[in-house]
Length: 602
Ligand code: GCB
Image 1: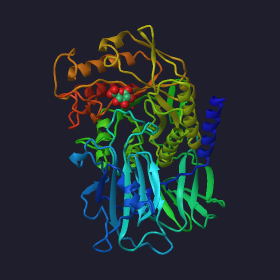
Image 2: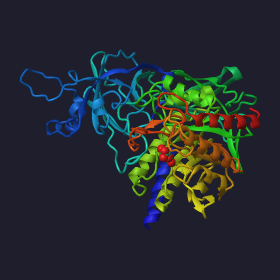
Image 3: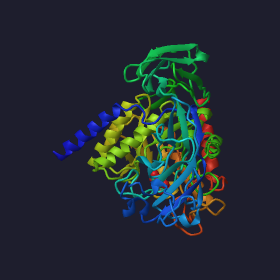
Image 4: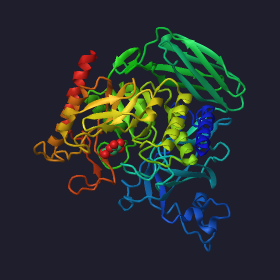
């Protein structure tokens, strides 16, 4: 009975998600916007006094009120204006030494002036804040958002003043057993307002959301929708793609929604070799928004992955959102570009953006550069599978990720999770997520990085009941590192229970760049290199292998990695060090991918 209840709950939650048009506006940078990047005042609030202190119970907004002393005898025990400054977007650990290991609440405040044009509407948009945030404008609570890697927005049309606005954000990065991710990860829990904050001005009725992509399994039919938000919901919206002579008019219904489907025969398709993006313009009588959108078809056939009808091998690498050349979270497009260019230099056509949704600019750059993307929901290792609230949170973050990136041709895989041990509760949870993903976007492939097991000591078997629900099977393996020595790979063969493509979504070994020795000495570049050599030898014997993404492009900070003199707080499995120096294994992957590229004639 309990089992049934859980399933019913997941199904209902999935159905609810199917109604969701994006909770955030599509293509926020394509609108009139003002960045609030810069110095914000901050208050470190270890004891949560800004929120729970009895003095604030009157309105429960505490520090959110940004109170100022009204007379010289008034007691107010905080002051944003006299507090130190920190750069937003950014994490607090890399900006203030005292906060390096801090996990808790920090309050941020930024003042601004804004002259809103009559009839227009204003939103404050956050690219992400890790992990939970509560936002206030001029003393009024706008809302709460949970999940550290996806965007959220609040309308502030009726609250904004021409001068002296106070925007306060409480950000709390405490890890929680019921959170997504949960208590345990292998990356640094960077707290802060880690992505852009924008003021976005739009007309009274505006084009809030749209999807312009090829229809599932088609190479010449565009299918999608447009959604208006505001009082004038029933309008004609024109979709034009000038380069392809496309001009389609649709009429939105009483909900401001119109679906469309039309032929775009002969339109140039996007691929890693030719990452063609079309200028797409959507215009209604009150609004106009343009975007650069690629069109491509991704499918599977048996154990093959087909891009625009052609079988491909995905030459990838995993990437964390670690800054490429220093401590801290990567926050700028330049940093994202540095890392994606390293992937290109390694002859990649694919990046696995692990283990959570990365910055929108990263995905847009992948579109421009021609890199296929595996985008991942932060369901990592073990989370509280039995808790319906944890499920809703995972589903919400998945929804926010898919809504944000649904127009990016580069994204070909939605990954539900990473290394989640098989149990029944976990299976129901994940089936619910896969169902949601398909309902929201049936044009992309669904995957997950699964675990595998051995039959005897020479046969690796991939058999996980969740595999039945995936289009592409992802598997992480560490032969030579966590699993025996490098030469073990020579005698191992692989068996899979599905006629589906396999991506080896992780493999690798730790090494300190510049530390040399023989191939039997752990942490040397030679030890890591040797593991890659044997692993690649093994890959060549797996007939259903359709892609690989080694762990990982660059060394990244992780509080689990403590070995003095070697790790010092960094996971050292990077192919490139935290200072941008390439390790020997980088060149092994580069050569393997050059060979794969030559075989494919690309
Ligand atoms: C894994 C995880 C990844 C870790 C990596 C490691 O299997 O998926 O998040 O960082 O192993 O270095 O152990």
